[in-house]
Length: 431
Image (cartoon, rainbow, N blue to C red; front, side):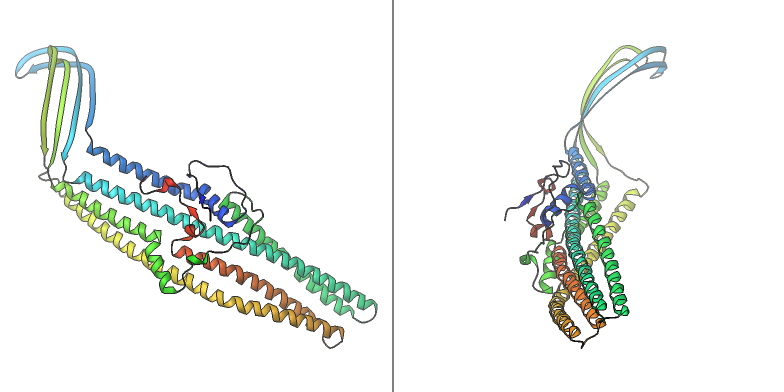
């Protein structure tokens, strides 16, 4: 199957008609503001890491100044000079050793970037599931509206027949009133179905960015649906991006702890500096110098700040570990719930199918018996309601089974993959 290739979120393409579920998901991923927000955080994390890498490179600073200087004494000699002082210089410094602070900071920002990337993928997975749910709910709503329209037409046909029987003296006014009441109920049900249909259309528009057209019944790729709960849990723990994001956050917290410990070490750098000044220290004329020096600095005492920051980073690591454990528990719980829904709704489908078949047989029998005077009109109307509800329940069960399948695939972190939708190259870990 040819894959849908997603464009970068910040280079939007012209919108395509929302015909299939896969196209709807692709449109939502390309254009939904929530994903654009997540993508912006990912891009920001990339830039923060690049900024940290810059500390490995030489730092060049050009400085200069001009102003008034009044000097009375210089090195104990009375000068009493008022001159216009000018300074210009350049300083080049190269970090040699900083207690592994830069290395740890780059590692921390790399892990944070990966956490943002996995968070972006997780948001895309969840958005894909929501689009799938709304897409199928909208198809359900469309079918139930059609079913409600058919129900109204059938009640109108019954009313027409009962009125004809009344004219022949075979039915009473109460029979006509009873059918009219059921017709009003069916019309009220139709309006409720239409209201739900329009609600689903609004939700679809909110997710995809365009009104739904020509929706096509989707079919989950059951190759990605686990065949057992144990396999589902194994796949969820292995593939779910939320767990990967939590692992990256834990690694980032560990790197932050290493970064804070760097202040226990001395700092060593190479500095090259050249100055070209005039009228310095009250002495008229040029003042030029240049130097190359190894600079060593070491904090003997800073009020205990380094110890406190290191301990704080250690507790942040403990916090990240707890979040990681809780994330895995939530993934396991959601996978179990998804499996239960998929399993039980799948079993319900066959019973609802049997319910429809038997209700239709009963309805046909009641109509024939009514015509022979062996059943009341109320029996026929109740049988018709039973058929309507059985068909409605089967429609719901059929599509809820597919929703449950998509939910289970999402729980294992492979919903986009099952849609044959590639992640944009801008989401790559090598970016």
